[in-house]
Image (cartoon, rainbow, N blue to C red; front, side):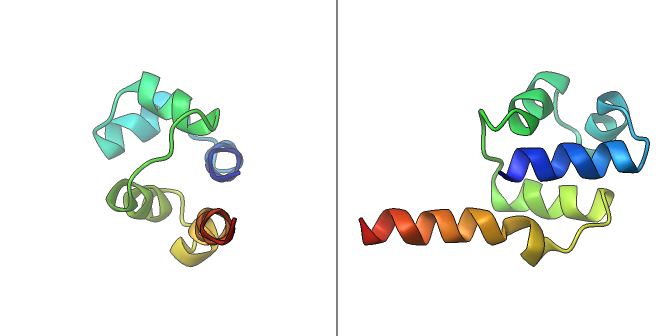
Amino acid sequence: MIGTKIRKARVSLYLSQENLVEALGITQASLSRIESDLQVPGLNLLHQISIQLKLDFNELTRDLVNTRKRSKLN
């Protein structure tokens, strides 16, 4: 899921949650919920996360878009 991608990217860059939340302007609790896939961030925050973690935005959000498409089909 998207939170797992975010966590893996953050860890691969040797960034602590504290460093990332400071750059993003969110709480550590919010980032923890996102990385645990308990909360899905909005598109603006996802864009900021992709910039901070040097991730392709489209790749980061691909699973999110596919999940929403499947939900609409059911």
